[in-house]
Image (cartoon, rainbow, N blue to C red; front, side, top):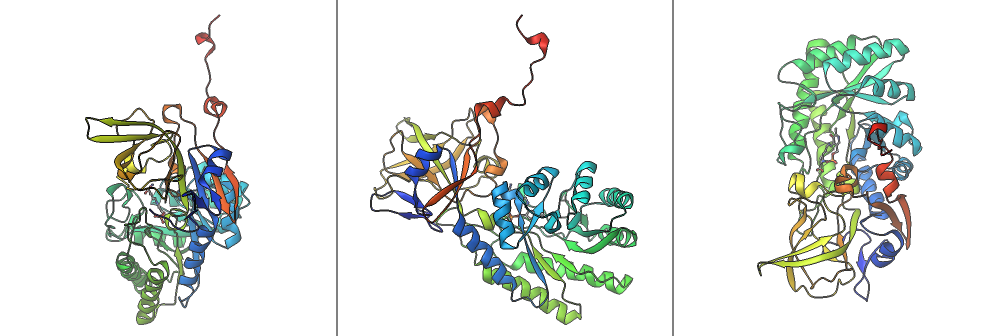
Length: 439
Ligand code: LLP
C-alpha cells in the first residue's frame, strides 16, 4: 500500500489523508475526488528550496503549472515564494485570478499566439522563454510596439534524450521544442535576440524530459549548456545570466517505484554547475529549475466509488470505478502504472487479483492492469495514490463524464479547490442552430 505524506490508516482500516477519512471526503464531496495533501506539497517545495541553497549563485524554483493548476493552488504556490511556469493565456488568466503576480511568471510554449504574447506583455510577465526564430521576431515586433523591455530566455535543444516514454521526451535533436545547439541555430538566434533593442536575453533554457531519477542527464545537460555559453563568450563576448534546466525530476507512483532524494539530486546538479563555472572562470549564472510532477504528483490521491465487479472466463476480474481515462488519461496514454487499494478496508487481506477499469466506452480505459484486493463490494472506496500531476490538468469530458472535484486537506480539514463539474457546465457551450429545433 502506497502511503505518502499524511496518509495513514485508522483502527477501523479506513484511509485518512490530512486527518480526514476517505469516507468523510466521499460523503461530503462525492467521487471521483482528487485529494491534495497540503503538507506534502509544502514539504516538496521546502526540499527544493533547501536543495538549491547550496548553490553559490542566485537561484529560483519555478512551479510548472501544467502539472496541476487552479486559483487556490496558484495562491498557495505564491505564498511559498516560488515562481510559476505558464504555457498559455489560459494558465496566465487562471494564475492571475488566483492572485499570482505576473512578474513572477515564466512564459513557455512552442507556439505562443500573438494575442497570448500581447496579454503577457501587458500583464508584465517576468520572462519569455523563446522557442524559435519566428516567435523571436513576433515578440520583438510586439515589444517595439509596446516600447517595453522584455526579459527572455532562449529554449535550446541540447541533443540529450531522457530515458523515458517517447511522448514525454523533449531534449532530443528532433524535438518540436527549442532551437538546436549543434545546428548553430541556437547561436544565431541568441545573437539576433541580443541585438534587438527591446529584447533582453537573460539566459538559456532546456527541458530534457520527464521522470528523471538521477542527476546524470542533468549533469550532461549542464556540460552541453555551459559549452554553448562558453562559445558565446569566446566568439561574441556574450555572457548570459540564467541557466534554466527545466523540470522532469521523477516522482514515484507506486510503493515499488524508486524515490528521488530531491535534496541530493538537486545539490549534485547545483554543484556540477558551480564547479564547471569555477573551472571555466564563468560567473555563476542564476540556476533555475521548473519542477511540476515532483511537487504535486505524490500529494494527490484520487478516490473512486467501486461499481461493477465481474469475472470473465473464470480468469480475469474487473472492478469498474466511477471515473477512468476521463480523469486520468496517463495509463492509457503513457502506460503509466499506479496502484490502488480499498480505502475503507485497508486492513483486510487481499483475496483476488483484479484490473481496475473506468466507465468509458473504450477497452483501453484501464487505470490499473492488475492489483490485489480484498473481494471488492459495490460502494467500496478505491484510492489511487500519487495521481496529483497531469491527471486533472489532462482531464476530459469524454462520454459526457463531468470532471471530478478537487479538495485540499490539512490538519483534519478539507476545503474545495475545484468544485465538481455539473451537467449544466457540460452543455454550457452547446448551441442549437434554430433550423434543428422542433417547431
Ligand atoms: N518545464 C518545461 C518546459 C516542461 O515542458 C515541463 C513539462 C516541465 C517544466 C515540468 O516537468 P515535470 O517536472 O512535471 O516532469 N503529460 C505528461 C508530462 C508532460 C510534461 C510536459 N512538460 C505526463 O503526464 O507525464
